[in-house]
Image 1 (cartoon, rainbow, N blue to C red):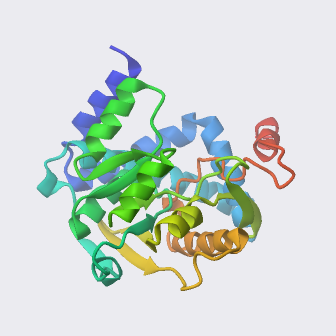
Image 2: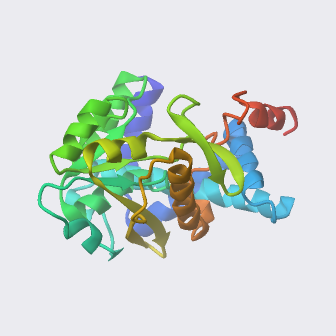
Image 3: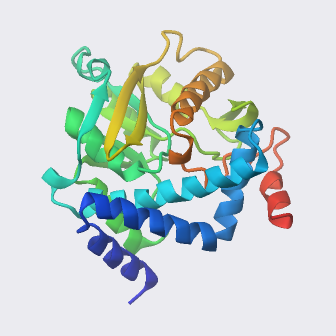
Length: 295
């Protein structure tokens, strides 16, 4: 049996855990990963150091550890989202701003912009509970077996579109669908601009602005956090000036919303991704290479 098959089997077993035990096991898994996943720990530490310059080294280390604990819980939440019976996937969810999603002209598409929170795969059941089936853009995994599991898990709630299939995404928006898009990762300089993210220039995709301009859909931001065994989800409208003719201004506006959402629960964000992989001079990886050389 391959490692992927073993991992998926473990997820199926973890899905059976009751909620309190699941959170405890998730924190334990997160602590193990904090100890063993050296490269990811260094990436998270670098990101947090750049984004929270007012914190001491000890505070950054503690926040990095908390981030792994929260993402460990996220692994359990993924198991629940993919494999639990639908009525038992979610505990109580506090929804705010739902009228921004439900009260819209007939046929108007919505682009739901959502960062990569630690409870990423719980976003689908939360949105599904609020509005019914919707569309999720995602990047297919290189491992076909794992990609199949991801698709089967997420198709319980949504239709999936390859994030690179822009025409398919546009078609869904023009047909009045709600489309989820994660706009907070460094995808390289092509199709991106540099805009401040916690005060540091970050390579930020312009795809949301282009999709909105071409489809006439409306943008909504989703802020999400885990609070004492329940979840708070807020649907937030963008300023009327978004999107504009200024891609940098649009990216700055989007990053500001992401910052505000993260500050409400900093450890619940996926800091393990190389958010500052591309530098403004278009060199790559230097911040993380320096960290790897000086762990």
